[in-house]
Structures are given as C-alpha cells and as structure tokens.
Length: 126
Image (cartoon, rainbow, N blue to C red; front, side):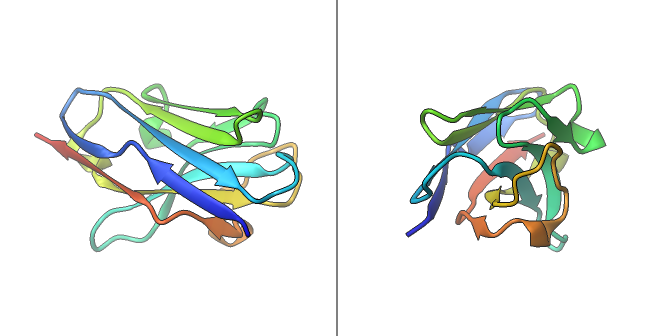
C-alpha cells in the first residue's frame, strides 16, 4: 500500500522560513518524480515545485523561484521543500504527490501525479 505523508507546515510571519517534508512508502523503488502543489482557499490547486526521479532536474513556478528549494533523499524516500522569505500569498495547503512515469524532466500536470498526501497547512501572517 502506497502512502504519502506530509509534515512540517505551520504558522510563520512574513519573511520567515519553513521546511515541509514528504515521506513516501510502499513503492519498490525511488524511480518516480515527486512534486509539491498548493491550494489556497477559493483557488485551484497549482504546481509549486518538482523534481525528477534522481533529483537532477528541478522545476519551480515563477512565484517561488529564488525563495523555495526542492530536494529529495532517495535513501529515505523523502522529499523536502525549503521555503524562505515567505509571503502571505504563500498561504495554502501544501500537497506532495508522486509521478510514477520515469521522466528526465518534471511534469507540472496534476493528472500525471498518481499518489497524493493529505496536505499540510502553511500559513504566513503579514
């Protein structure tokens, strides 16, 4: 049974930092892409950042470039998102998801991601 579990969300002031983590289990290997998505109240879920199976290809939405860093530890089947210089507009539920298609690149397409976590709330106060 595949499980995807996020952790590390919370409340932070604008300009602060948070790191969210995602632990994946139940898969036989780490040869899958991983991504972070977020959904703010009243808005559609959007791609934030992603990495391919070996971590050598990463992609970020423009609004977080230079502030967020995605990384993965395949030995621990864990994905991280380091978020710096957080802004109120970053407030959302952050979801981790797995793309089981082995690709060199990173997909931004929600339907490419098969397994999803339950989400972790990130709230940035002004």
